Amino acid sequence: MAVETTRDNVCVNHIIAQKTENVIVEGDSIIPDIKPDIINAISTSGTVCIYKKEINEGRVRIDGSIDTYIMYLAEDENNRIRGLNVNLDFTQNIEIEKAMPDMNLETNIRLKNMECKVINGRKINLKAFLEIGVKITSKEEIDIINNVNLQGIQMLNETMSINSLVGSGSTKVYAKDTLMIDNIDNLSEVMKADLHFSNKDVKISYNKVLAKADLNVRLLYLTEDNRINSVESVIPVMGFIDMDNVTEDNVCETKYEIKNMVIKPNNAEEHSVYVEIEVEITCEAYRNQEINMIQDLYSPKTNVTFSQKQITIMQKRENVQSTCNIREKQAIPEIGNNKIYDVAVNAEIIKQTILNDRILYEGELKLSYLFRTESGMDTRNTVIPFSFNVDFPGVTQTANIDTNMEIVTQDFVITAEGSIDVKVDIAFQVTLLKNAQINIIDDIQEEENRNQNTCSLVVYYVKDGDTLWKIAKRFGSTVEEIARINGIENVDKLNIAQQLFIPRYHG
Image (tube, rainbow, N blue to C red; front, side, top):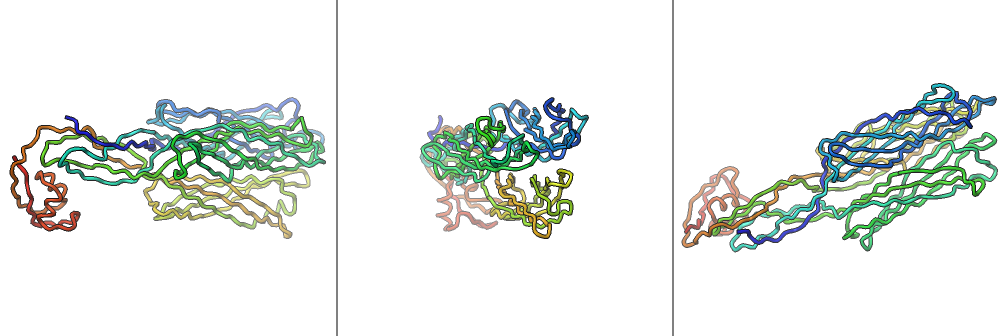
């Protein structure tokens, strides 16, 4: 006969698989007829746009494009600098054995570097080096028995803190703006576009999550009289995500992903550039929940049987944010006092060491300077090594952590003596993920009753590994009765060879 129980319903989200692959995306492109032939590429940069992501059985598919800007030396009578905008499409399949269509997919795609090779005056070859991080999680609703409604039942309980998934969702928004350039500038073409998000924040109210951030846009452009200039703007990005039962006490993690971008001269207004970026915002909300779990049970009066099943849960999910401030003075003779048009900044972690309560990162800050020369324009690459400690109470050497880096501030000033003052701030967001295997008691059945008529005392000597619970269950007694008869104050402390008198019920 089934025994009546009460249960807690918990939604758990646990990691199925994580994988990082380095991928090369390659393709050829033809110079449009309206543009002059290319002699050599001066600078190549790009922004990753993700059109579609899906999980199939045993693999993940990602469809996207790299919106690429090439600044090149043109083969014309003046050897002028020109720009080219190319979309480099890609489809990437990543094999993951445990992947299933009903699971959740999270990606982190970073453009590490781009190369442009001139095949001939009308044709180029592009290579993009991508780092694709994939994480697959599974959501499961489980019922955990917290009480058994049966007289005389003995239960061994444990209170466990778990990270319960409240909900997840996404929304698509558009960041639009018209960037005004100098009135003396007649725009010829956009040469480069740098985009990054900053100041991410969430507000929770009325079963909705308001996600907001700033999209920082910096454009390098060419004027009709062959000058290069730049313009910057901060575009607010905001979206509402519906999520039942979300509260202000929950922890919300948001991710911003560019899906498409349009950057073009604004035909409706002179001296301006129109920017439209399609952004997908995804959010997951969690709450820390204390659950009372029954580890074992029996009855001195009744034959009770039960089954157990093992599940994986996310026991802990914690976030820590910290900012690494890099200050350096660089002397680059080739630049001297020439004007710096642009600096491409890329931060990369070379080594990660987890110590108790902190994480040590060793990395490189890669800088690519684009600057004016007497003959036109040139680039120089430099590397600044850095090390940075992130304090993270509770982190251990066996912890599973995710690290995301964002460049939040960058400033480069040429000093009077010709050196460059470098100021770069890197925001580290570190997430600790801890899965746990737990056994859940299920399907409790009451069998034939024992007739409790008399009881007797058994003399028992404690052996290594014994607990009062194990002894009581073995002899059909109770922890409380053994402790009372033997005058035991601390039921968790027994000594080997200790003599115990055990009341044993029998019929």
